[in-house]
Length: 345
Image 1 (cartoon, rainbow, N blue to C red):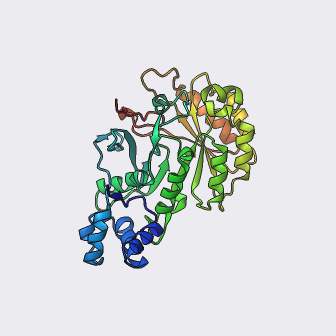
Image 2 (cartoon, rainbow, N blue to C red):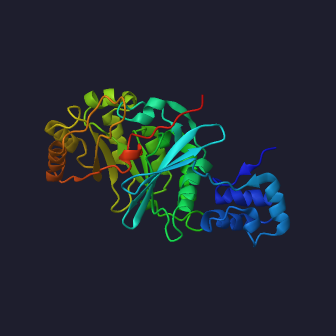
Image 3 (cartoon, rainbow, N blue to C red):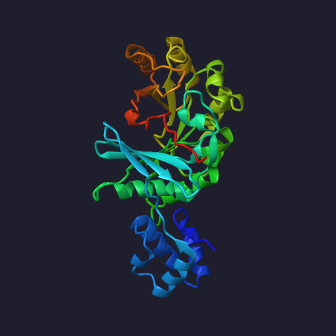
């Protein structure tokens, strides 16, 4: 019988496992503390666990954090981490330092099934969902690569895949990441979940009371433009999506982030900007404008800088908080929309 990996177990599940092995729930809480708080991954090093308990545990389980198959540094200081799993599939995560902040972009699926035309990951199609352990493992693995006085401070679910299409694993990983006592202890305000706009998933996430940030991959302000760019719009058009977002529970001073990839002569005109202002009226919103990041075979181009700034100016003049987000890691294929790894033959 193959041994299970304890990375990705909720603290309560580790308590249940301890009871199964004839120990108290307290031993499960100690185990969670060693893995998630102390980041110790060798059972023999968990010194306050009884030796016989560690022996029984070692027969049933392991604590494995993935080692990247490849680490590629960028000129801007970011690093692309490529992980290869036992089934041969690969995914990427990206470490992005910025002053005293270190952001990790994590993946939730191998590939993606939503086929957004401007996103290279969508070209792969969907191979499979990641487990909660494979998601949390990206965070633990990145922290292990950093200097002893450094750690990932912010986490964005913006890597390969659609997080809300892998809902159960997403929520489990978020609970582990935000558990302040036995988990990794991240503030929910430092975690952002991005979605192409899966309305049922948005509504379910709003009921979880996790209080993480929500980001919407919008990329157009009309169905006529968004539909051809993002096939998901055929199932959940802008009217349906915006109605769900107006109902979404936000904490005090929290806003919904809207990601908008600027594509030359597609969605970057002054009229597009004016439509975006009208679309987001009444929503506590922040817009992140992302100049298109090129990839081989792409049918789109990045607008010239004056056009990007003119688009931003219209939003700012209307009172919308708006930033231009120049993606990190573009030179190593690690920028927004560029993540793609080969799949096993």
